[in-house]
Image (cartoon, rainbow over all chains, first blue to last red; front, side, top):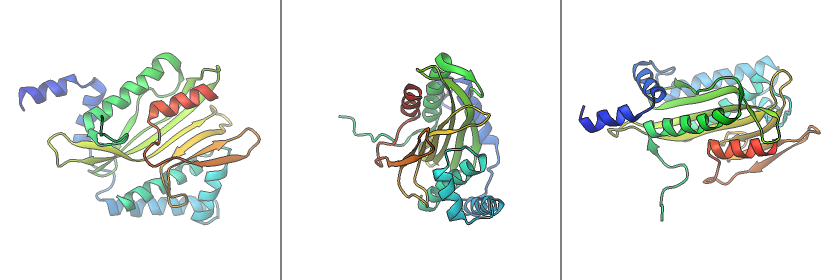
Length: 88
Length: 151
């Protein structure tokens, strides 16, 4: 490692340094983008089934609900992630 | 003239630093309760998720506002210093638990609504969904400034 790179690393905050180190050592949650898409699709289907509704209806409910529910939040988040992964 | 776009690629280190610095600024002056740092998860070698959930900040009006931020980051690891950019996000403001109620949520496109948008929830139970232009969706500080000045 050159002195410049070393200096750059040392300029990072302790949190940034720890994130870079931990991510460098961590195994990814999914081995590939396609595996991530499959797993997220399965999770979204499970959330819809838990409310006895279709994925489409679940997302409509999540978009319109003023009440906050973790599963509705998660369904929107998964949908957004899936859209981005499929289009990236 | 600066030709960089608002949400252009940045070095991964700088991306993290900017997020930490921004969050610290609000925690220093408005912290009420909850986590004080992002959780970072490696989804794949190319995709990382930053999130903070349950952070409660004090608004300009004296209210406690619960904040949930989730950002997915795409990494380009072909460079000597990896480059990063947000490719999916949710910025969400709600009342504190228990009985949390949604106030405002910015979302990146999803299949149900394939463009950047924000949900505005009203006290009477109604809501509006407003389009957000592709290149001007907010940074975290812009979202927090909007929320903490309005609620």
